[in-house]
Image (cartoon, rainbow, N blue to C red; front, side, top):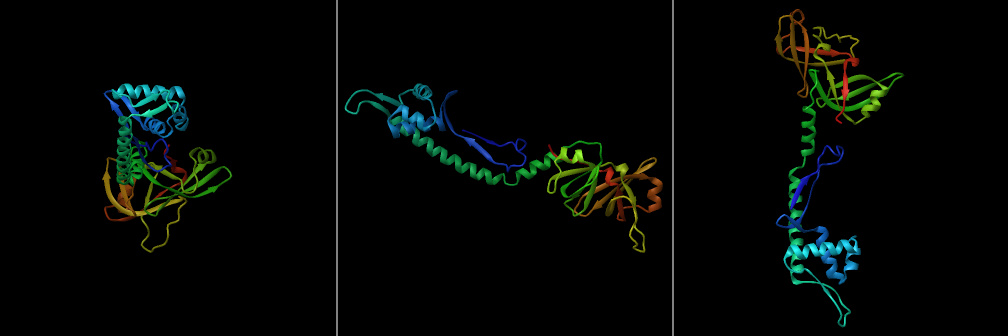
Length: 281
């Protein structure tokens, strides 16, 4: 008996399912699985090798080869060919064959119950597997965000793609028509956005509440999580709503000028042209 999970990478858009099959073995030799047991059952029903082979979609020679193999491996006849007599001959099953059919069907019923229980146990595993694939991506871009395309606006040369993040923020990217087609981007498609930390500009909003006016299309508000100083630059991590974190590399002078420290509100801004989009293959 074997049971195997369907590889989600083979059909990424289909739900994960559990499958398997049952067969009998004698040592290292396979006595029979569903196909051979079905042949035996058909012989019992029809009393004819020819009719049984046709019923299970097997050639006459293939049916006899299977019967010879089963007889040999069982160590005793399972199928007996009768000749002459009032009935004009025919083919019948031995008591051993009838017992084998009943046993196989009982095992198969239990196997189906097992698959049902195991299938319920892996519910939600497809999402976990997809997450494992995403976090395994290695890039030089410090910021990696995952979301779904919420809008796609066609332009003369380039397309504007909006990616909705789980935390409610939206990242806008500008890509070529060719990239849109090659990636299969459309509303509802899952994708990830890459932004290098050096492309992110940090700002602190004015005390008077006047909105910031910038040419950068993306402006994500958050709270400074940490500031790590280097010899010249500092790495500043900003907590966004929903648990995502965006990192920027700015000069130490900028950190001092803006008063960036843990707990301070700030805005991470970057151009739509600085966003690289990707999809899971």
